[in-house]
Image (cartoon, rainbow over all chains, first blue to last red; front, side, top):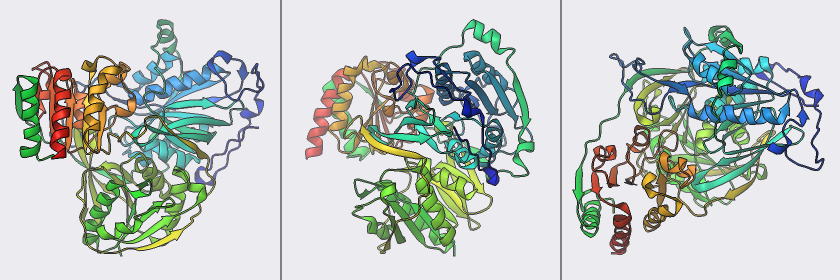
Length: 302
Length: 323
């Protein structure tokens, strides 16, 4: 029996869905489920994906006149690149487990629905959007409202990007893990689930090309890194189907229970512009010599 | 009493350079809060934990516990939170390293307080921590202050100078109680032995799409290996083309670097790459295309064929470094 414990605010919720685990893998001795064993298992697995909509990485950032934020007029909004790996990994897992469901959870304004629909077009089943307007959210309060939804949904596993490329905070996974009482690993570059769905083995990159091979107990939350997979494109039928997939609406103010942000955002600024320096052209021998001289005598790097 | 707790790190028993930067900065802040700096470090066989005292730590707690032989966010955070609950620091700082970036938000969440990541400025205003941190990979910066206490943050490596204060630290060893660890590191796999990490390196040599293939990166590795402490970086184009692993990617969907010297070879300079290396002290660009955007950010640009220039540069630097 898969026991699913959420200890948020001391509340303990035991889940019964996992009791119906039926392992139909052909090779009884097999430790992990490989893609070729597709759909040969049945399990009411609920897979959550935390998704954020962010400006495209090619966006030039312009500040508002009062330095309170960025001008949003020309921005092209996309799924946070790391969250695309999360969606893909969730869909790969769903393909292995008959009866599995993938739920996209987003805290964001109405425009975020476009990104949620993209994930639904890729193959996710439904969405839950937490309306953020009227709430001052930092990583703590965002994680708090997300954990409330995770608690309600009783996910067996949650995938998220390791960080969002707008605020670069890289802390939501860790906060959600703590507030939902689940272990986390972030970032992950590989993912394999055990045959009984109780554990996952992931590789976490640390400094200088070293990987921590980590075994984590489900339910858990994993922060996805580039290299984990290659996110699929939505198919045309997928896009058509996504239009009618349900997206439930919730409000951050209702979920936060009176709690708010713990850090206060002050002024925005732009980094100092770098001026172009010298530019030389010529024989490789000469230009290399000039560069070494520059590094030693002017820049004093060596 | 407004004490500051810093989370120090080590590799192979040697305290990390960025931990000395952090303790130096913490000592400066403690001067303003009127408190002391206390450091905590995890691991056995740490040779120079007491050296943290030279840079301002009054006390160093070394956590030796076989259950924490490898990093564990949950286990480390539990031990730190227990220490915080007894010693009551008002500020908790770590480095924005692979461990610190993961551990400090976990600690902050456990204490149910606010957190800021990868700060490039830390100051005390009205007795409270005020930070500046980059967003959009450095395309903009935001100031933050905190509600409640303690204030938890990570500092970007290479952002603060190491300053000796000439003090000494009292070193204590504890086992700590890591609780039940549900994410257990089974082993460390070294995919690339001995390579310096781009995020920590003083000097980064990066290659782009122009490298052409994995073999093309050899000239970049040769140059990096000829300079002590240098790391190999890459543009997203090179990583996406499969020339090199994502561990090396510099930019908005890779690592943000802050070295003394950044050499970009065959990198045109897409916005998302420039964002990841713009705070480098000195930027050198080598590119065939005189119009490449990278030249607008470079202190020293060379227009030419990197495959001809880089090997000559490697030889000349080797010679220069021997002198």
